[in-house]
Amino acid sequence: MYLYHFGFSELPFTLTPNTGFYCELQGHEEALQVLSTALKTGEGFIKVTGEVGTGKTILCRKLLNEISNHFVTAYVPNPYLNPNELRHAIAAELGVEYDDEADPHQLTRLIEQKLLEINNSGHSVVLIIDEAQALPTDSLEALRLFSNLETETRKLVQLVMFGQPELDERLATRELRQLRQRIGFSYRLSTLREEELKRYIRHRAKRAGYKGPELFPDEVVSWLHQGSRGVPRLVNLLTHKSLLLAYGNGRHTVTVADIKAAIADTEDATMPKKQDWLWFTIGFAAVCAGMLGLAVSLGWINL
Image 1 (cartoon, rainbow, N blue to C red):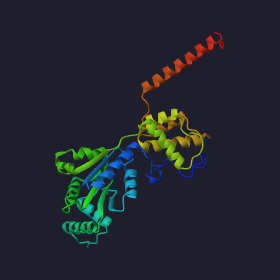
Image 2: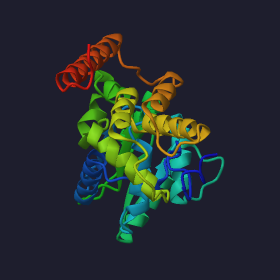
Image 3: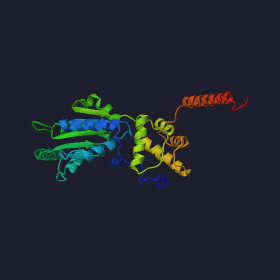
Image 4: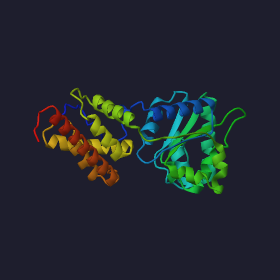
């Protein structure tokens, strides 16, 4: 593996959402600010959406790691659950004790009692659901009913949903309009701009212990941005593959050829369109012609 070849102390571009590699990207920082503001104001429902691979899970884990001690959190990472399974998952997260024979109504009452107990102790409860677009419709309705639980002054539970754009599409339907109207704050994550991408890969390389010369020259970064479309997960995959190629060839810098090969080897990556190649060829030919003309005018070459 290329770990020691490049002087890394650990692999910098894994697909695991490791918060130790968290980079303060504009979109992620704005989303965290929205979440912080919404939680402080006691909003019932908060939603963060973004395309596959834009960093929702690492943002979710960042929130879990840094949330104030004032909040008691319940985290549901796999929400493909029917309403009763969802109640059991929430009860387990909150430490609710119940009999295995408890019916849905009894379990809901026990959860409500636990929420009241936590609120009476001066804390607030936050239910965080990752991949929320996978929630069945009747489970989304069960969540809405949980949001009805409140004292005279505040909600007993706040809900944060992280999901793909399909979640927005589902919430736009008439069937889920009551839930949609409960959402007080929302944020949509975007992909990385080229300058952000450059800062992102430099940050991760440095965090992994790299201290050498520039690993990814600007031209490589440009190709990487086109190939990944600015999606962090694809960025990690393409940089990992290109580093493997550079290592295999005994080089300490990634080349355009490396990144092209990585793009070609990755199904969801985007190879520049044929016309882009045509304009590149025309431009390269024009530069060569200009250099040839300059050489002739200076007498370096006789034609």
